[in-house]
Amino acid sequence: MEIQGLFEKSAEFHGHQCPGLAIGVRAAVEAQKLLGIGHSADEEVVCVTENDACGVDGIQVLLGCSAGKGNLIFRIRGKQAFSFFNRKSGEAVRLVLKELPKMESREAKQNYILQAPLEEVFEVKKPGYPLPEEARLFQSVTCEACGESTAEPYIRLENGRKVCLDCFSEYFRV
Image (cartoon, rainbow, N blue to C red; front, side):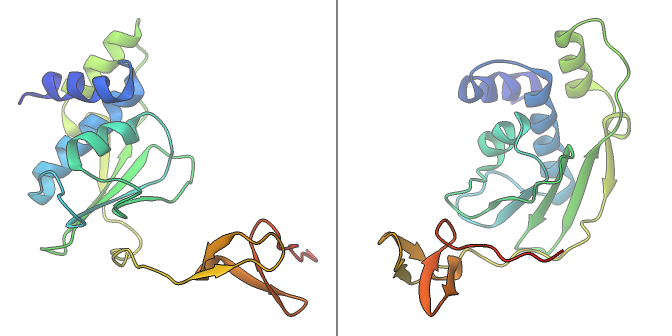
């Protein structure tokens, strides 16, 4: 399917067409080319996104990365940047959106993002961190303050009691 069709398919999931969605669609398409990947049935493709904006929906639709499956990881930095990993080959790429030229309309910006040469839209780099481990299942622990069940890594000890992050009183001195 051509990129415009992929964009329209992603817009059905996202709810509307916008330049932000175009960023994610273009990043997913380029990752597919650069890493030789397709739609991820399980965790064979991993995306670490540095934002929680519209583009993430395009990546979900085209690459099959999702938070629930454990292969869409949010590393929020406020950047239009996405790192993609191919678990089978070990290859990885980080795509960082470049400053785009001013456009007269949202539609013109969308079209530019979708159709301009790769080097005009993204800076192609290597991620500065390794491939994240596969999703793990954890024991559930009952918070001794609120009584809610919480995954073990998110329990803290406070005054000798196991408490969830919502009930835990952070300790800061700086």
